[in-house]
Length: 224
Image 1: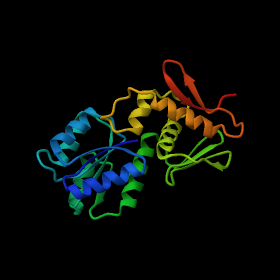
Image 2 (image 1 turned 180 degrees about the vertical axis):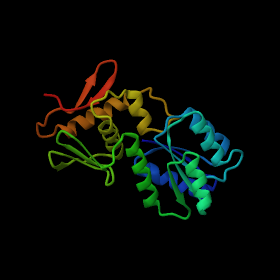
Image 3 (image 1 turned 60 degrees about the vertical axis):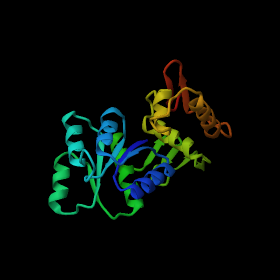
């Protein structure tokens, strides 16, 4: 899942970016409002975490421009401005959530997870496909009741495919959700991960859940 984090306080920018990546998210980050606006308008993100007081272009201006262009990305405002008027202004301009500094990183993660689920019209953190069960809060997966031993990237791919269950996802789509957007999908890395996932999902003779659509990509679904 792709996150854009725009924050001008460098220690916070560094620590939150690191924490989000360790949690399995792809993150673009910047401390400059003008660059943040460019990222927001040209990239594809599940959530934007947005500070309000930024150099060159402030956060509310970024939010206004996004909504003017009818960009539906979920925006979480992260700011030291904690008055009711400040909150109402941000929400009325199209923000989806508001978190006041200082904050617990665990709460930020929980709010990000909730916004990501909203992208896929999911309210529950539990995602099920056949006998596959994924807990997006705990970031664990089980097949036929047995826990799967997944790397962080394997889990990220599996969760992304489960949120899109029944729909084809291309290699580029998968790549963009496991690597920073600056990377380029010139290798067979995605295929390597898919093959590793298949081995783990089918361990013990279980049926195939990840299917190949030639020329299109992959789909996670149960077939008769």
